[in-house]
Image 1 (cartoon, protein in one colour):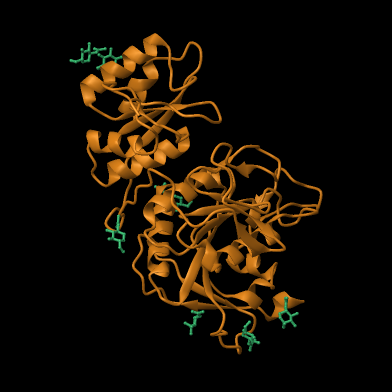
Image 2: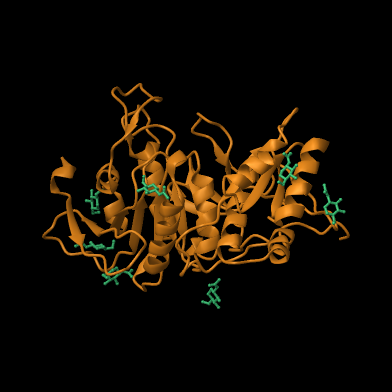
Length: 366
Ligand SMILES: *[C@@H]1O[C@H](CO)[C@@H](O)[C@H](O)[C@H]1NC(C)=O
Ligand SMILES: *[C@@H]1O[C@H](CO)[C@@H](O)[C@H](O)[C@H]1NC(C)=O
Ligand SMILES: *[C@@H]1O[C@H](CO)[C@@H](O)[C@H](O)[C@H]1NC(C)=O
Ligand SMILES: *[C@@H]1O[C@H](CO)[C@@H](O)[C@H](O)[C@H]1NC(C)=O
Ligand SMILES: *[C@@H]1O[C@H](CO)[C@@H](O)[C@H](O)[C@H]1NC(C)=O
Ligand SMILES: *[C@@H]1O[C@H](CO)[C@@H](O)[C@H](O)[C@H]1NC(C)=O
Ligand SMILES: *[C@@H]1O[C@H](CO)[C@@H](O)[C@H](O)[C@H]1NC(C)=O
């Protein structure tokens, strides 16, 4: 069996990241040197279904996480024929448990890896549930034209027709593709390549879950070769944050609007330490009139930024001159939360924050 000859070398990390992770070099054989004519890719493993095992090959719910970065590569030895792989085991959790420690560690490690001339790109393996949040975070935090590819799986590694191995192979293919440069962070699953800016998880269970409705896909895999529909570009409104000296993040809560929404939630969030709020509003950012008063009182009392987003799966919230809330434009609540969080964490004030949201959608007078 191939796995018998896989060897893992632990190389002391020279980088000082918030958490010290060893850089692991995955090779086919400890005697075999790295093949210098192949591109180098760094995989950052965080957990998720792609790293999970069920008790039978028909089990596709209720499985548990247990595979490390080396196991992921062992399942797809073809990857070592197209690249040299270094790995970091940053966490091994379901993506509902990804937190600021992990996101910041990813951003710091990736920035250092991509600064190395010999590294062509990075791949993050991640649970799918919040993959779009981590992808969007990296899109804002990584200032490099090299590919940052986020990948996961909807079926555990033990399942019939597990999707993880091919998704991972395609992710590495994307990370080494010269055509993938200059497109921001990307999400790839089920043959699709999407921008981290717009791609969202659409189905809780189906393997065909990641796509972007209005903005569309960046590309598609044809016989495992990435094909892009357009030349490289970054989305309108993209903001880049320098997180070099940021070691903890502001707290931003999302409040979900609905009929009879409790206006007390605004104060409860602020009392719980929120530095900013995102409202998953009804329609294009609406709430009840009582809730709107509670928001305005809270804004008057504290000045904290409150972003109006939409609970509908798609669409945008238009800006309104003089409104105390900040319109999210096309950002869905979970992406608006990341953008607000990084803006607050890098010390931006209210007007600048309003400005970075406003540049992603047409102004009302345009
Ligand atoms: C190194 O990679 C190149 C390019 O794919 C290949 O032609 C060559 O056979 C590889 N060398 C070894 C020792 O595997
Ligand atoms: C991969 O890394 C090796 C070792 O650092 C280096 O010699 C080689 O040039 C790199 N490959 C590419 C394509 O940059
Ligand atoms: C890797 O490439 C070699 C040479 O082309 C081939 O013999 C081998 O089967 C390949 N291994 C895998 C796992 O694809
Ligand atoms: C984030 O999760 C990791 C892994 O479970 C844990 O080590 C770390 O303490 C957590 N950070 C926070 C701020 O809770
Ligand atoms: C990104 O990098 C460019 C050039 O490498 C630099 O001019 C710019 O200030 C950087 N942006 C951030 C937010 O670090
Ligand atoms: C929220 O707190 C403010 C300031 O303490 C108070 O004036 C306001 O009535 C509270 N709002 C609600 C809805 O409880
Ligand atoms: C918030 O402050 C503005 C400006 O002072 C004022 O016009 C408005 O009535 C206040 N809103 C609430 C709900 O207290």
